Length: 412
Image (cartoon, rainbow, N blue to C red; front, side, top):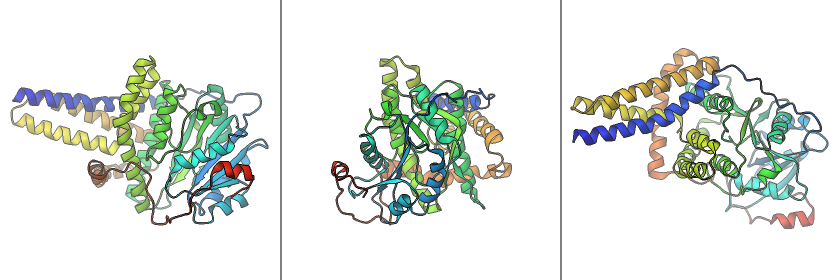
C-alpha cells in the first residue's frame, strides 16, 4: 500500500515540477542583462490598419484614439468595430477621426467575431500589417512603429508589453493583481525573448503581417481567443515574438467586473491547457519544431495562484503520508519546488515590482490566493468557456451582412 502511495505522490511531485521548472527558467532568464536587440528597420514604414474592437466603450474610446492617431501616417487607417453597442461608442469614434463599422448580432458575441468582421472589411484593400488594440488602452508613443517594423522584419506576429494602469489609491488585491500581470506579461515574456522562444499573445498591442493573420479564422466566442490565436498561428508557422520597448497600458476594472473577467480568463487558460498543450506537443514532434514545444511548456504554467494552491495541497498530502509511514522523498521534492516558486516570484518582484508592491504587503499574498480558490473550484463545477453577457447587454436586431455593407459603401 505504501508503495502505491509513494509512486502516486512521486508522479504528482514530478508533474507539478514541470511548470515550476519552466517558471523558474523564464523568470531567471528575465533577470539577465538587456540584449539590446533593436528593430529600427530602415526604409518605408509598412502600411498599417489598426483594428479596435469595441463593445460599449464610450467612456474610454476617445482617449484611446487620441494616443493612436498621432502615431499613424497618411497611408494608415484605424477601424473601430462597434460590436453590439448600445451607447455612443460609434459616434465618439467617428468624431475622433476613426473609420467606424457597426456589427449587430446578439447571438454571436465576443472579440473574435468583432475582429473577424473588421478583417473582412479591410480585405478589399489589405494593409501590410494589422495592429489590434483594445478600446480601453493607452498606446505609448512609438509603440505602433516599433511593433509593425518588427513584425515586417520577422514576418511574424509581435506582442507589445501590455500592463495595467495603477490606481491612485490601490487596494491590496489591486496591487497583487498588478504584480501577477507584470510577471505574466513582462517578466516571463522578457525571459522567453532572451531564450529565443516565442510568447503568447495577450489580446491588445498585437501586430500581424497580413500574410499571417489572413490565414487564420478569428470568428469565435471563446474566453481565451488570444491564446487560441497564438496556438493557431504558431502551428501555421508564425510564432509570436515580443517587443518589450513597445508599451500599452490598460485599466484595471472595477472589483465586480474584474472578478467576472478574471474568471473568464483563468477558466479559458485552464481549458487551453487541457486541449491545446497535447496538440502543441504532437505538432512539435510531427513538425520537428522546438518553438512549439516551448509554447506548450509555457502554456502549461497555470495562473500563479492556482499553481501555489496545487503545490500546497500536494505537499500537505505528502506530509500526511510521510507521518503515516510513506516515503519522505516526494515531500522533499515538493519542498524544493516550493522554494523554486518562492525564488521565481520574489526575484521577479525585486527587479520589476518593488515600486508597486511594498515588501510587507507580500505577506498578504497567501490571503489573496485563498480568495481565489472558489474561482478554481468553479472550473470543476461550472466552467465559463464562452463569452458571457453583462447586465448592460440587450437584445438587438439581426446583424446586417458585411458584404451588403461594403456594396452599399456606407458607414453604419
